[in-house]
Image (cartoon, rainbow, N blue to C red):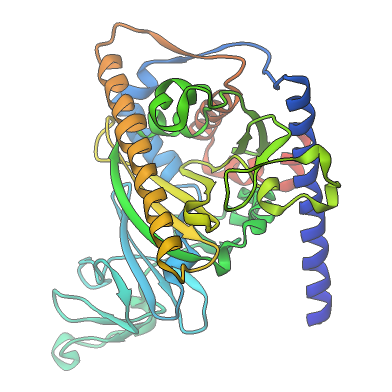
Length: 420
């Protein structure tokens, strides 16, 4: 049985690697021809989609509280007993690594009076509510009621922490913040997780993390789906000659964008490798994974090479308290934990550089953009034929806001998704 499972996994890996090769082949072809894939037409989005408070509340309810969200990279909860408490769209969430090694997300709310049972992050085999002392195991089971004789009889099995549907794939942990959700998380990922597996995140090391404030969540996310702005907004950081074109590949609402080119950066150096001079079977995995990988509605993954060590920044975006605010936790993960000062300092410098790019350039621009839109003087904003990723993102936001709970299951069944 184990050998059969291993064979199935190997076959899936071979098939998904072939998909990566096919995408890279397309990027090389467009790079040689100096072309890019364009969508059929420009598209307008109502400016009020970014500024209307009622619309914002609807997005939180219909998207962030109904769809699977990536709550943590696996390496953030690397050991049994690891946990973190967080808030998502007003919902207190507790994510734990249980004794058996599985990950589970819970409502971080004591079943006695609702007080959160955990704060921050760390390691714990149990959580004791700071209000009345009810104690829960790491797996959510109610372990003990304070002063049980005084309180009265309690069926402990009926007072466990409320579980959220949870799935761990590709070194990432997803949860749906609706305990009654019937939406299958694997179906929601549309096979995208099989490609993400090739990063190998399940064995990577969490080097650093931080949380930064940002503009409206869609304003922020637009930037992750846009290479068009790179040589303009980031001319003093990335450089004015940086590429501004991207081809888009989609799996349901999840998108990868990558620059059409036959050249890729060699791991750990500034050297450029010409893929046309190599046999496809020898293309390195980091060349096959170049670009930005986004997971709807709030994740961006991009590769970097600070200090010569292979790394990636996983950006986790959530809406804030009002329509003009968001916050993003940036996880800098590395293929190997740095073992010498040079690599360690290089990775630290790379992560610091990315904070400048995102916080001081992308998000400050987004704040100014949002303030200008709040004037109400523009009816629409526009996405060009070269901005297909942004067009698809806003189309999916509209589609999923309008879908009722029953329709969600149908939208993400693999058969229907493949037919669309």
